[in-house]
Amino acid sequence: MASREGALQLAEVTPMLARKALALPTRGDWRYEFKFDGYRMLASTTVPALKTRHGTDCTRWFPEVLPILARLPPATILDGEIAVLDEVGRSDFAKLHARAKRRGLAAGDPLAVYCVFDLLALRGKDLRGLPFETRKLRLRKLLEPIKEGLLYVEDVDDGEWLYQAVLALQMEGVVAKRVGSPYVGGDGHSDWFKIKRPGATPPGRFRREV
Image 1 (cartoon, rainbow, N blue to C red):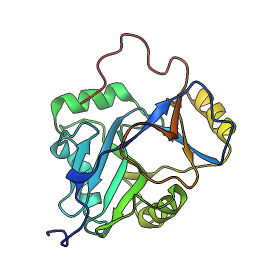
Image 2 (cartoon, rainbow, N blue to C red):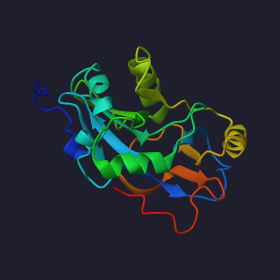
Image 3 (cartoon, rainbow, N blue to C red):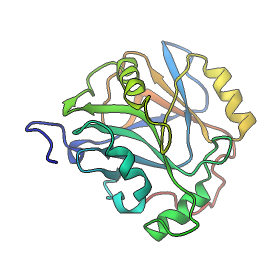
Image 4 (cartoon, rainbow, N blue to C red):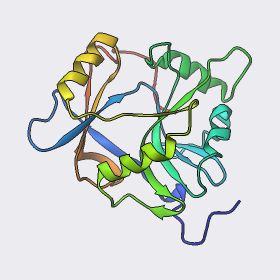
């Protein structure tokens, strides 16, 4: 099914990347999300497709996600992380990396989950200029009927509480997002910060990008 004329296309979207920080921001109004240890991935729904932050087409690598994307409205674009999650919701990057190297799903492989944190287009309409919290609300409503395969990434207003949960659960980190901010593609925006748990990415670990 072709997208409507003038609809935002996946190829036109550059992901918005967070700045690295050592601590949570202390000035301004912020919301906070878990940072999953996975592959950053943009997704479209008209013909279900997955694209990495560097533009690699990974659609065939994670076929289990495609039927779920197809259930969403056409000409919709999402942003999130593809991850393999354990029983408490922690991402296992080693298992995901092994999956990615095989470029597909084989018998006995763990299933990947698309952890979605932003909605960039809905039915062709570009939403990137809307405030973060508005996009988030629309994303929550969109994904509410989906019970498996796609995970809505919740946001909270207590960053310190979330960071302590990251430490306790040994997750990767926290992403802080400024309330009212639009989605602007490219590197190191001051509206998004990522704060990793110490030791979350050990020195010398295998190359992460795909």
